Image (tube, rainbow, N blue to C red; front, side, top):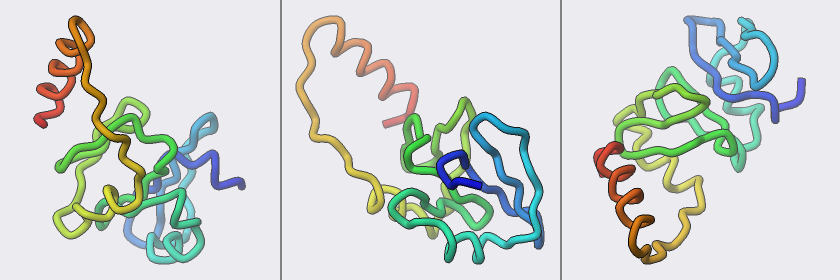
Amino acid sequence: MEFRHIVYIEARKNYTRLVLEDKPTALVLVTLKQWERLLPPDQFCRIHRSYIVSIEKLSAFDNKQVYIFGEKIAIGEQYRNALPDSVAILAHIPLSGHARNVHQDVLSELEL
């Protein structure tokens, strides 16, 4: 399997559930610790004791959760700094008019 198909990985005791981009979900007998050693760290980030996510597939994130493929996944307390440290955050560009209002609405919805 190519890593680029992985959206996120969820711990399920000694198994993990692989949520894939365009394929059925799979359960495999591999722990999250093992996945952490296998996955390229510039492409994946552990955000919770039960989740590793594909950085490329993220829609957005805040201090509490990530938004990925229409789902919200909580960020664990001890992993709060992992994602900002792994992602290049673009500089703020001032917006005008309607774009500013839309931007503010999105930020409000994300509780920023």
